[in-house]
Length: 285
Image (tube, rainbow, N blue to C red; front, side, top):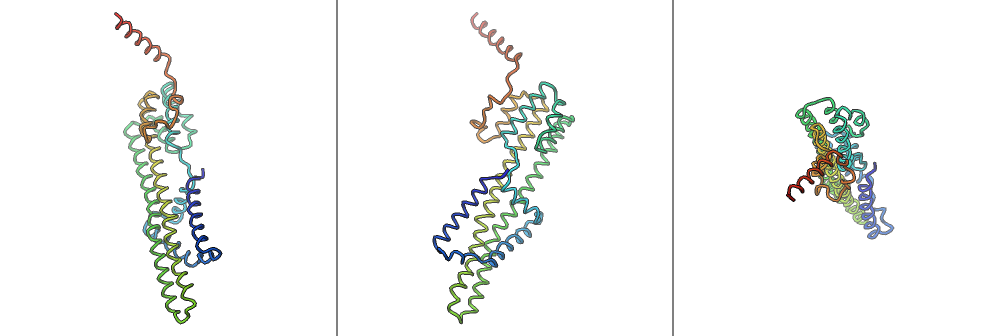
């Protein structure tokens, strides 16, 4: 699913920049484009970022950038609803009854965790395996984000280098005063490209990936706690309360939890009614 927020945000930044350029330069806005300067800044920042982040190759960097624009994750709220429904099945028919519904789950991590519970894996082993996978996921996300942050750090430096190169070239042509102004403008463009790449592209995408990573880790933490609760035979309503505590604000006002939770069993309701009547009778006597 395309992340419209990221696309619209970058588009808004591009529109603001274009408006600033056209408002200041008018029909001469084409002077703000210099392909060699742009290639020097972008190419230099990408190569330097890859050198600084050896664990991230070109293909993986492309996947990291793509992930900022495409969201395939399940929200923590949807995950809780799914786990509560599975807990109701496990409580009613046993954990082995989850085999068929689990096979149809979209998220691989959730499938693997629940399959370990179905296979009878002990609680400690299940939790250890899942936590190891979460740590590995967090490390991969940190590496991708670090590559973008490195590019943001190096881009202004390459812009400044391009500007200095342009100034050296311009100063070597001081015998032609008519070329000093255009030469200085071209030299300064490289600095503009470096600042733009860092602050309009790399840093926003890095922050977006950090947010996406925190959401994914939260969702998978909810999965681990939910699977452990299902394995322990927790009441679905109790399990929902535990998992909801992981949401910001405890999930209050985020989902109609009462309508999504399974109804209380008739036997439990009858016993609660009987207990209440007995208490009322005792207090009356």
